[in-house]
Length: 126
Image 1 (cartoon, rainbow, N blue to C red):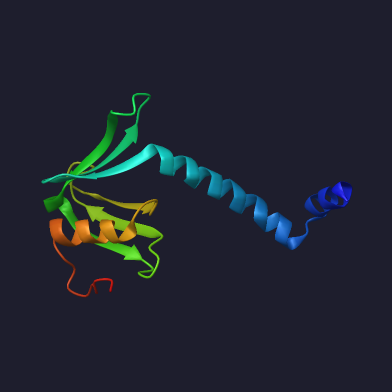
Image 2: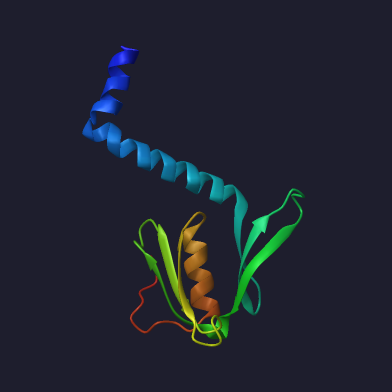
């Protein structure tokens, strides 16, 4: 039985071959969920990492809300991916950023809606 399962991996059984990359991606996202934090202050959106001291965060990058020119959260019923564009990086040229939603997606949408310029065509989640 065990040998049969191993041969499915080697032979390229369609489900098994697809499961390996999905397992690796899931493991990566699980680790990131326990390490990465998004902090919404009064004036900035910050990406931070947990340190060995559970009470401390190491700030990785930060953007003023006024520099965020566009944002979107994909798949409103169950947010899985967030995109935003800002104008602070690269000497004012700005950059786009994508990140998986590893936390409460509704809280993310609420923070972007209340702290950044709203997009005219964005519908708030129900």
